[in-house]
Figure 1 (cartoon, helix red, strand yellow):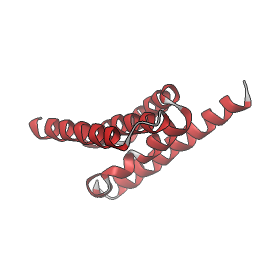
Figure 2 (cartoon, one colour; figure 1 turned 45 degrees about the horizontal axis):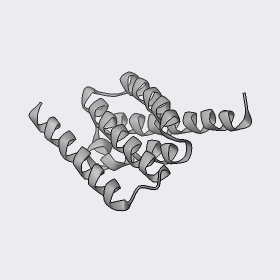
Figure 3 (cartoon, helix red, strand yellow; figure 1 turned 90 degrees about the horizontal axis):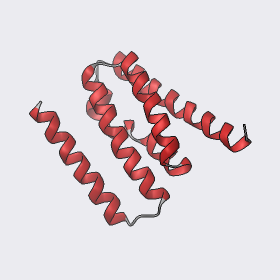
Figure 4 (spheres, one colour; figure 1 turned 90 degrees about the vertical axis):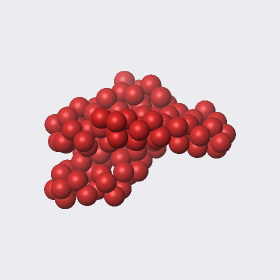
Length: 121
């Protein structure tokens, strides 16, 4: 295994650990973090995807979802899933140097559909 692959795996594990800490604190505070600081869930995967690429971001987000299944309520799982989609989109766009208009428009579109689906179900 090359040094760069080891670094990618280590950074991914650290991002999963950060999400685990946020999920644990959210569980201990009765869901206040997910309702107040919803955007905080997307930051680790956004930073990781921007640094390492979409392929490694997808692997890390799968690990985050598995961790969420162990630590979270169904509502938090939905919030994390939607945050991961937005973080992956934005991180991949930053890595590929998309314009801010595309990044903001895509994020607003994803957020609109996710909030709409939350209110429908």
